[in-house]
Length: 247
Image 1 (cartoon, rainbow, N blue to C red):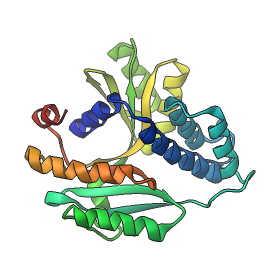
Image 2 (image 1 turned 90 degrees about the vertical axis):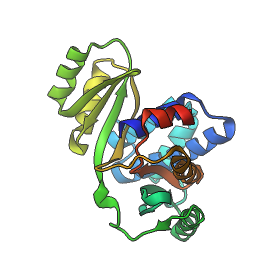
Image 3 (image 1 turned 180 degrees about the vertical axis):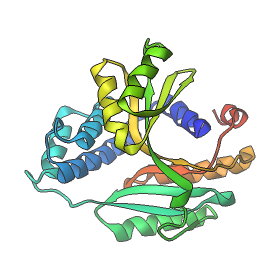
Image 4 (image 1 turned 45 degrees about the vertical axis):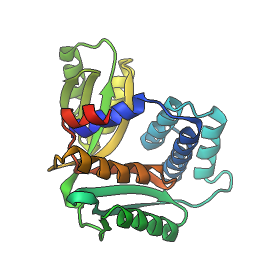
């Protein structure tokens, strides 16, 4: 998990061009709409919506875009009806994939995703075929000047499961049920957070030779580029040597 997490941070640090940013905004728009649809349009009463809005602000999405997405989701203005769906399968070299999607056309999404798996030498599986290899967790990266002892005391009291120090700061892991309370505690303490999110952490991982890992990551990139795909999780573990070579 740590290797894959570190690679994700490296990719984020490289920044995004205008084309990539527009795709990120499109995904965040759908995420905001779904959150508003399911829990209402008030961020103070809807933690899922508050988190989606926070992500949108972090990606510099204009305020008007955010407000419009909330209104569409809450039914105040007309918009497409999106559904949440997941796809599971195996990519190159036996790496398990779990893909989260928001779409207004499930037939289009499944056809596109199946094609990407097939072209990479993998195959799309049935529901439950790889889900057992992942655990749903909350993950929050923290920057700033907080000391490890103070941060540990704060997040442990709020229900965090683990605190891990790395070169960029700290990574906090929570159970899904505790994610909101830990996030709120950090926010109240004025601690800067980077990409707080609910993720799927693999329970077992595989380290591959660099050439094989590159093939897996090409499928990851292709999936992440698809406008319907919200997140991609795999059982690929990237060690320091592979990260250095890829970076």
